Image 1: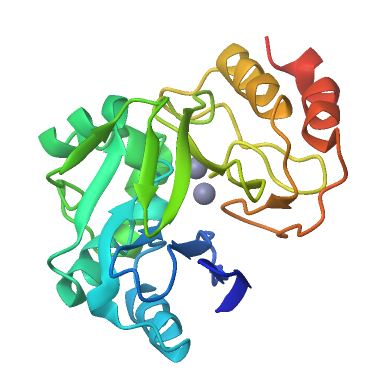
Image 2: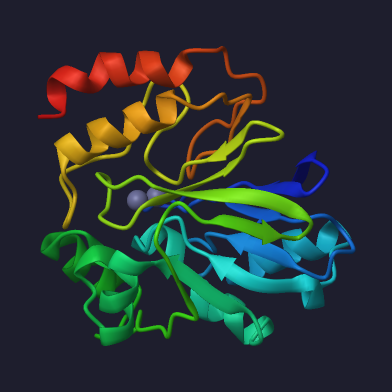
Length: 241
Ligand SMILES: [Zn+2]
Ligand SMILES: [Zn+2]
């Protein structure tokens, strides 16, 4: 786990044959109001908790888990982590909150073939990813959390309820799986995904000033060149129809 800046910590995903999402902790130390963004893959709960503790963060300070979206590689170890911080609320975009509460796992697994494979590999029962959602995010909120302001951006396309978290003051973007470093973007063939929506979401992100890009996978970038996301959107536009 690495401190990116005061109030933003990065825990690198530990990929297996399925990727494990990066996790982030946001909020000023001592605020008693820290948020864990995206727990990660099944089996990674202890690693993520250990990483948080290694940085000297008291688990009691973590008051909520915010999901950029509810794919398996992001929500897989949510239950493991909540065993250790059972008081933490779960915040999810409205569109993915309903299915999550009803045990509709199509968005979690993304496709049937993958679901069958994962259920066998990890010995998962139907309904393993049913969660009560404490707060349904819509997009457009300014969250005052941990002494920092984070804007919620609804950026569908990779999944229907994908959100980005944006700190305008420090120009930090946590876009989930919508956009990565190296001009890469999230896949748009899974359940509820839509290329045209992803195109619009990329254009929305391209309008932001971003210095630090903290995506769900792959490299993180501390000094993102200006126009980087706009160029990413331009390169992918022909495929996002
Ligand atoms: Zn992911
Ligand atoms: Zn994803």
